Length: 215
Length: 253
Image 1 (cartoon, rainbow over the protein chains, first blue to last red):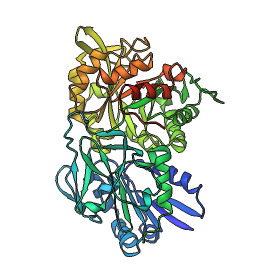
Image 2: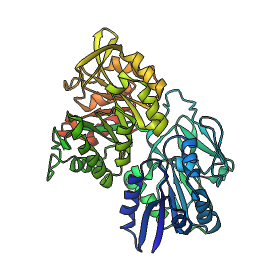
Image 3: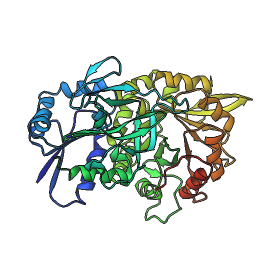
Image 4: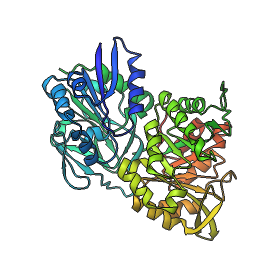
């Protein structure tokens, strides 16, 4: 039985993410337990981790760090044991070394890079970037395997991550300029869009995450 | 390029849909969850629930509707109606809503938008503006479901709402609401040209062409409609096809 920890740190819409994970898990072979939790013991031993997040970078990072042992447990699972990890929206942004929303703040630093406000070159591109937009695949990755180019996903954000190493960008999106829609490094991945709100396209990505075996 | 969103709106009272959807046969036409599923399957880009429950005590039913909908529909959900505090918003977001649309309470206390944006991010906070024309090129905002003329200018208020932290404007023309004569293009232009956040056009849709015009002429980022979708007068497919033919970016399921 695989243990999947959906990290519950008081940020965002856990219920949608939990229901999406459960719905997809039922369609896959194998047994999985999906638990929304902030328990360091469970998280340190989890087979996979999902980190959601909405709101401001600092508020989310603070909410992670004030929970005793949480970041340490995530480090044990992801960095030491190599458990597959998926960050969603601000959960992806927290992977960066630092965020520049309401001042500069340190992130998890698992994928070196910075999170900055979107500044579209096209004046018609509104901020927040809100709605369905098409992904451009930058390089092959198991999370996007079999997915056609120009697949629409649902975005809602005003900040975006710029990885220090451009090859960390797996998929990009254009909104008055191109930026990272998905990043990955080893067993760590993050998506700026909301797979749990992107109907069939998003659920398919969640399915691939649940079966992902990083090399 | 981000797609133009097509957003059906369901009026919910005490947890039941008031104007039933009948573009498909439903087992229970009053169940908002069944209707949400039908729209999910039909390719809606987002769904708006408008809670028109009169008494505050009975609003808990909306939490159940949102939770049951979020359990089966994996698309963005917005909820409006009767939200007066950050705690009201939090309860809806925890139940599974992605955005809350705030009208009267934000007009009376625009800082509520700031408190909401601080707590959940601007992308969660929609400022709902009910506007009625009072003279050429001037619209006042109305509160309490359109019963109270605040005397405030709609364009000024929209600008203030964005400054305070609203991430989106839901702009309803009270003159056009239910008239099916098309959205108020002049009102849309006055506001879409003035604010930096997405604007949802609401009030007046009668045909697929009206949806196209709201975007092409009015500058809207999304179009909301109720009865034309509920009664199958315009199918979501037909709406998107018309928009695509007009050169607008739309999502095809």
